[in-house]
Length: 266
Image (cartoon, rainbow, N blue to C red):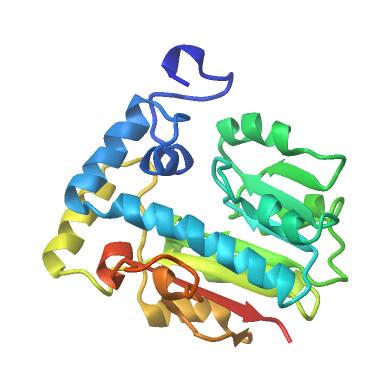
């Protein structure tokens, strides 16, 4: 895909996190502004592409854990980004074909791809914003039964929501709407493992993007799980979360700079 054939409603002159992430993953659904923003951050933090790949692996392992170990058959994946191999619906439905998945994102290009995922109602897509959780819940309830356990997926999303947009309150609203037995899965960028110099370089590059992120410490990320029971191995670098089956050697915490965790609602 290129600027000349962009679907209607997409401003190709402004970088978008979903398309920038697609670029880091080696995808083709991105534009010049996305690539420029991605390259600027990669210049400050060269292993950003490793982070993106490991985050997708974390998603795959987390969804499989939810489907196999927890028996969850419905998923609400907010900030899904542009679909790629081993996305939530593919992993869940490979375990249990009846699994229902609702994706939520606010980039029109994701909608273009999402139309191809609609399989007789088992997979749905909402054009929505995490910062409006009540709206998401109301519309998702047409496909999901919130009286039954839900796998709530907030993967590589929350570091795109700054404190002034009250992310903790929005997560609490979403979790409160889910039945006991539901699970919250989060991956979140952090600066805990990098030098102050690298942190400053990344922050300077990120500040020039339309959606500057806010990385958080392990303790700050733990607040999102308040009232929930975090499963082993806890809040750890995504490359270490139940990664026994992944090829070695695995990336270092510095190379991924992203925590991942999953927690039960009792």
